[in-house]
Image 1 (cartoon, helix red, strand yellow):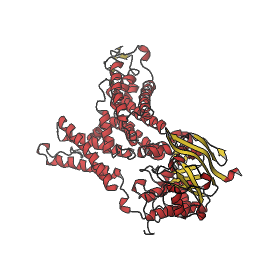
Image 2: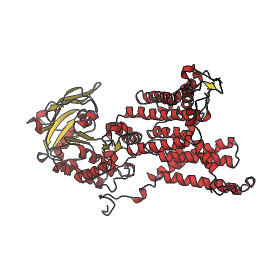
Image 3: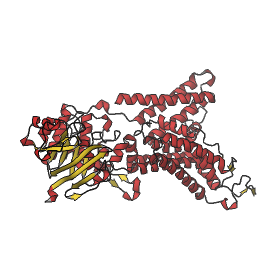
Length: 357
Length: 258
């Protein structure tokens, strides 16, 4: 035992065990993936030396291919909003499978209060309710959507925390229930023609604005507030959290409520962006959201990971998707490749943890 | 006078179904006293501790803390009343660092109007942690290190530092050095000596005879759910204690108990 170690201590501190923030690894992975696609653009014979990242047209206002960057981030923004909530759930060592169908159900519910009365001077052909639900201020559908999401989350959380149903089963059930609600709400018919102010929520780059501002908000919450600390503590050692006086059950309900409200908000943004709500919306979103979190280094055993990781994970997924399209890989191959990458991410994570222990 | 008695149990009894795990335990400890609880496996030591700390509900009997009868409905109640416990299974969150673990469930915060989203006062917690560690004599190289990167001894030290930092009235340690190496055990024992100097009362459950004779003032022996001896350290020795533990001898005042 040496006494010249760091800190006030007598016990030695192994510096090699000081871990490199995981987020750096993901960031490097992101860069490597971009480089690979850039190289493929040069190497593959049918690509005609196209560049993945840079602007190859004779435009001097920008060196980057701005259009592609925008598409990449726009594509992941809505699922990214869900992933912010799923991240918190996974940090408590839970899982939320219900988010995809919840996106659809919320889109239906919110959209039915966001319709306009007149479309080009004619009555709204997709009207679900009477005129009393038409041309309402935009807060009405948004608040209704979020409250709906909060209710679903509260039910999830109550089943998981108080009735001790495994999160996988509870949210799998809710997965089907929400898909059922989405279909039942308008008997399977699409709901369309929202007000202009509702459309604005999803117009242009607004989904990206929502995604990034919510990411910053939840980064602060997870890192600097009691809510965040308790979320990590529960995922790390639930018994210790309970013995330390944290109200674990109430906290879990809160986490699931926040996650579902984020998924509900994603549904609002998605329906606003598409200007329509359909029961089949958001298919596989829950899985992509989980994938983003997992690629971003959120451990499925709980206690570890960060919002920054998830944002980077979302970017990785977006770049891979865009890259595959760029090298003209068929959609079916894309799914296979993406599945493999998700599994590889988990294997890498486990390998890293073993080395650390 | 009664406030001199830290903890007093009368006729404390616990039955698990038909099993009489603890029968009529009368126990008393004074301020500043360190008491060891010894006994064979299944003798009722842990059961006794679990009744005091509110982890389980006693079948009958009374528990008084500083002369006031208490009825804890859970470990949280006991903690709020000033009883801190180091459990055999460490109650630490592996992914958090030392201040986080020390203050888990009682974080120092700012902006409390934000409710569950009130802000953590990291600086105050770090400072208080350093003070607590100095006070208890716990040496941890880097308090920003997460618990999972620490050795078993360091973890145990964190757990003990937590109890010692906050325990105002009574600390209970259930075999704190059972899983530790020689040097780590020595460190834990140093912390316990520190607590003795500061007059913090302690109940130590241990199998380690040398440790018990090194650290405590009084030894209470359990056998088959009953207290069979209450010995001053100076008036006994290892062989004597073993005789009580194994049932060769029974304390005069406990004749007929077991």
